[in-house]
Image (cartoon, rainbow, N blue to C red):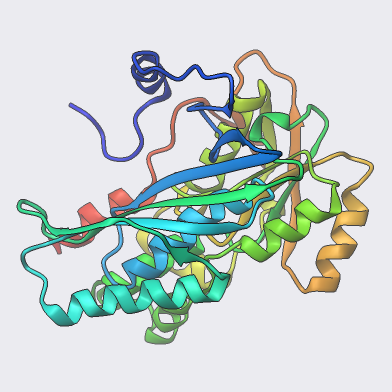
Length: 338
């Protein structure tokens, strides 16, 4: 029986092998760890990505735009053209549908994106809306690839680990959190994090510096899974230090009440980048000037099992070698029963 979340890499790799993917103009096709496909077009590159939103209900239109746009932006390319596939539950009313489209419109306007097509239907058999978003960008400059992380690179984290996850939980399960003793002020603050899930400005700024080897958008599986994907794509591993990962007090409060690991929780709004060790101080200065929260949390290392993540906590080292099932699924299963 399949587990919730992304398919295990072993299964996914086999399934992708069944599909035709070879084309002389395809620079990056379907590949573990890569955020978006890259195709040569004219004198530049078309960058394309699709992503479904299946774990959020409130503000799903907002999530769908930003989470998919982030995966284009970490290529160093501006997301421009959007095609949403919107599957509506028969349980929804007109007001809820209008709210979904309003949120999608607001998100698009905030990053300068436009809709060029898509599909909308009422789908039998689902109890919540599902939005799958395809995003396209175009660039004549360098396209940043996840596979370009190098052993010795410093691992840079920008933004809030676990912020997206606690925003979803606070928005959809506020009453349940109150029952667990979480203060209303904490829940309200967490709900506001959904307005901070875009990394488009951060990613494009980093790309302009020319000082990053790779960038990745931590979504499902959080920071840990993002680092696994960087390692799998680049043939390396990551070593990070838990005490160097800054945790927002709100994220800490909600993850503590639920007994979950914020480093394995939905983290759109944060950005992981690998930078040469002699460039980290230059990048840090630029980020300080922009007012972006950031921290060097570890380094890219050589290893025998690419994609492994070593998490150092004091004298203890935990090695993650398997796909991370996002903590959000455990939370939904638990709180839905209460």
